[in-house]
Length: 378
Ligand SMILES: Cc1cc2nc3c(=O)[nH]c(=O)nc-3n(C[C@H](O)[C@H](O)[C@H](O)COP(=O)(O)OP(=O)(O)OC[C@H]3O[C@@H](n4cnc5c(N)ncnc54)[C@H](O)[C@@H]3O)c2cc1C
Image (cartoon, rainbow, N blue to C red; front, top):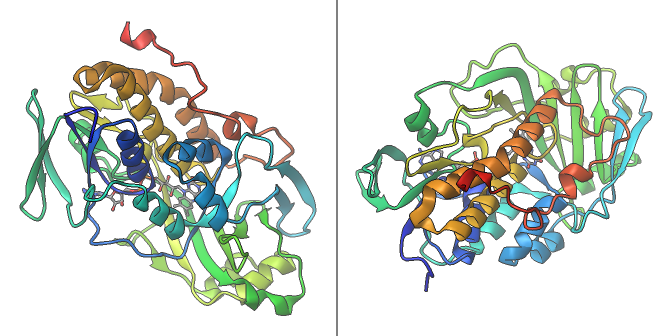
């Protein structure tokens, strides 16, 4: 039985929206989660979930389960993509929780399973919102509607909620794409090479990040960052090919050549970003994750920031109650903006862990141990 009678609507059940929903429910709020997709599938992609996120997942009881299904690398290696020389060896243990690399679909499935039954509504593409002052009216493309006391826009980089708050504005194409491929680890045996648990191969203007996505290390995954003049496709991603990959990484290290040789299917994704937004909330509407501060994915912390946002929002609403949503939103922004902007800046610059540095400011962060900066509600 929810502790608070009022309803929170979340638009978008991605990694950020799903986390926010579970954390808000854990805090006793009534939550409805609206997602445009008809359902979710296990799309070929991996993801890093650092100790900063695992500490949050502990709250909703999925940290152990995630660690069980994930690879748990002890180090992040950075290596020269051509010579193979080691540029850094960053310990991933000692930050108060496990560092996981996992299949994105498996992570998302765990997050969805943590929701109370009946929370998630598929095929609900948000069309319009009317913040009437006393509550919010939501209209979906399928002709249905709903009401809520507050609305969280967790609807990604092309957020409709952001458009309603700030107007229509396309995100900036960064001039880079990311290729993604999952490779059965068995296919790699024949190369007789050392496929390390978590390694980023750096070239002068491109890179390839590689890691396992399962606890039994049966799947290996790579994601690249490669310059690409324009993105002329309507779709969120397109198919690439082994040939395109071989061309992009010609002359690179034998491990990279082997990975490309073992690739059956590879997709290509545009990397977009936005400048920091002038506001994160207005009236009864508030943004989180990529809807609020999208970034190039080079720190592997975009989803982590979306999940941290959800946790902070739940914490702030827990402090103030929904009645004082306006104070909660201010508190949320003042406790998230600096960190999210710092991560966004470093991620876009693509320098993180290239050389030996201490990542404790990212991984050591414990959102619940941080005192709330409360000046915003004074
Ligand atoms: C190549 C690549 C690699 C990455 N690797 C990592 C990594 O290793 N670690 C990491 O932390 N991050 C990584 N990221 C970043 C990460 O994927 C994003 O930051 C993260 O997914 C953002 O989560 P989100 O919930 O804010 O948005 P999304 O995951 O985009 O979810 C938004 C959801 O909203 C739904 N939606 C959209 N519009 C509507 C609407 N009008 N009505 C209803 N529903 C709607 C969408 O269908 C979607 O389900 C990577 C990104 C890329 C491109």
